[in-house]
Length: 93
Image 1: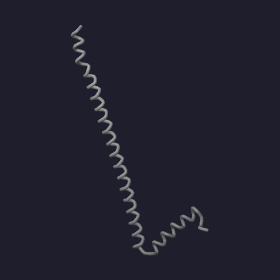
Image 2: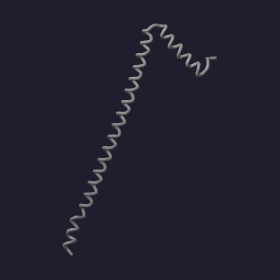
Image 3: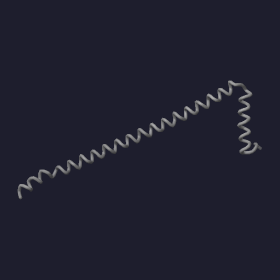
Image 4: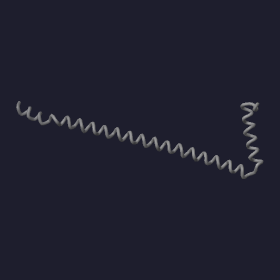
């Protein structure tokens, strides 16, 4: 009987050490997931801004092409845009 008590006294700290190690592992896992999420969010934001810049740059190219083609083409495109607005909203008062 006294041998069993002596053995258990030496094992009492093992559960505490095991619990602390488990908490450290879960903390590390949580921090890793938080960092990964933050990085993915930055990547998605950067992709969105780059895509928007690409679309804006493409629109600028089309405007330059219309200007280079001559004033009649630019005026025709503007006239078509105004006609399209008038058909939706009606003529300006």
